[in-house]
Length: 423
Image (tube, rainbow, N blue to C red; front, top):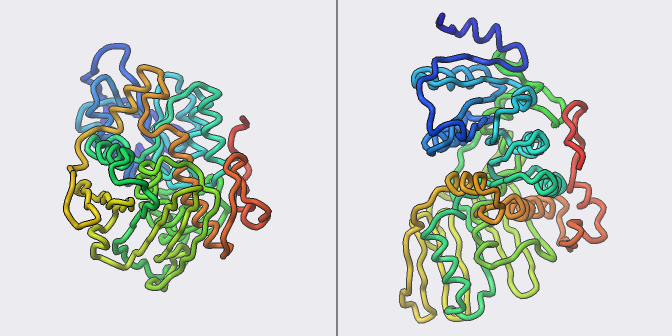
């Protein structure tokens, strides 16, 4: 077969979907191999590809990215392994392939539910990066679509599959520290400044209209593109949805709570003075009937806080449980150390594949409903910060009580041609 050059690829890829018939020499298992497509892999998605590739009975058979340089680079990696892969620029063309079993999504936040929802409707199971959604309403839609179509959807809060951490959560819930009355989720780290960049023409290798998808039309800017899109409200959720969601999810898991009855949040830029739209400092409090969940974010502190950079503290009547990157530790109120352990092993992808094969939502460690609740807390914090007041929340209806301004943030407008599917 003639070698596919970059010129051939770029020329042919102007079509919405491209199939690159690369030499294929290995098939794991037999015809029951699960066939995976990965959408978006300039960052976390590359890890998805590797994890699925290393899972027995699973094959990555399709990849999709709107940046041709990113797409071609990954195609070359498959080619070097003598593996066949279908390459797409438009995920909608990819979903026409009925042989794809699973779609794994690591796009910018504003594309998570659009890609996930259309994948579910197309009959695919879905692995979706955090945060699950860009708004509370679209998160609920994805939950409902997954249930309606009987699809397995795993959320990418992978701490839920760590065996050592499961032991720590079990201890928190055991009652050995008395009543747990508060949990603190800590996101403390340093993220660099991005400066200010002017709008520019779109690079020729970027399919920018597809990248924008449902978002409002605006000129291309490198400070709103690769990774830096996290800091723009049209595409991201700030670091609360980017990294803080991991700590918020662990806090919610340990407390055994879902959606709160009220939220307060303040935030702003104490360090950044650049193209960031989202805050570098944020403090939120989520109120439940008998516990509080607090969230603290500082993106200018490259040092631990209460023993952690990113981590959690659970405060009980008789002591605390601390959870960090290295593990968990009990400290009794007299200062003596109690039980503890590492975060431990476990594979979130393996857990997902088990549930896909068994067709049991209950096997998932981070089902779509779990992801929706944790993402919703991130959105609630951002909304309370943006409107500047304490908000009461009706958890059953998933709406703020008597606050039209806050409720306007529960959903958004979708650009024509990029609407969500109807339930």
